[in-house]
Amino acid sequence: MTAIILAGGKSSRLGRNKALQVLDGRSLIQRVVERLDVLSAEIVIVTAGGEAMPVSSAATVKTVPDIYSGRGPLVGLYSGLSASASQQSIVVGCDMPFLSVGLLEYMAQISSAFDVVVPRIEDKVEPLCAVYSSTCIPAIRELLEREELRINRLFGMVKVRYVGEDEIDRFDPDHLSFFNINSRADLVRAGQIAAEKVQMEERRDVVL
Image (cartoon, rainbow, N blue to C red; front, side):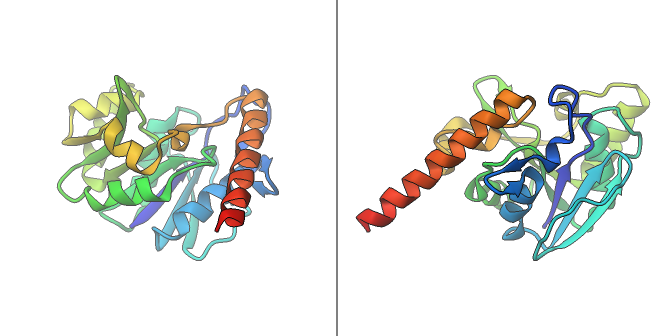
């Protein structure tokens, strides 16, 4: 399965390219790539102008430009799916450092009968931590032609499997997969979470 990372945002609130911000010694996008490596033979990174990202990966990595630059994640999704070699693709943001590999793998495993598999907690959907089929491309193109740029508008046009909170909790009980970084405060909080995770792993190793 292909993995698509959307990295074409303007990072206006953070003031600098958030994909390249460093957390615990690695850039945000490198942390995302490392989680996707075990699930994907191909990783497609969508950037505004197609500029390459400095990442290392066991998978084949290619960078593609947003087909219509600066118009939001629906365009990035369209650009990534158009470049994907797979029928189904995992799609995530570049600023999600705590993605659960188990949750992504679960969604991939149940995706074959659906156009979209997407987490939903109460009434909040997480469209940038989901699995999309290439069958979504015509519907996305229709939305773009109508200047409707919200990803959620797609879900009423295709066959969707919502992953409920009870399913999410089996893999990611703290819902950290959906933590994304839009501000400096978010980046500081991410550093705290990363440090807490290291401490938990160290305590677990002592117990074992």
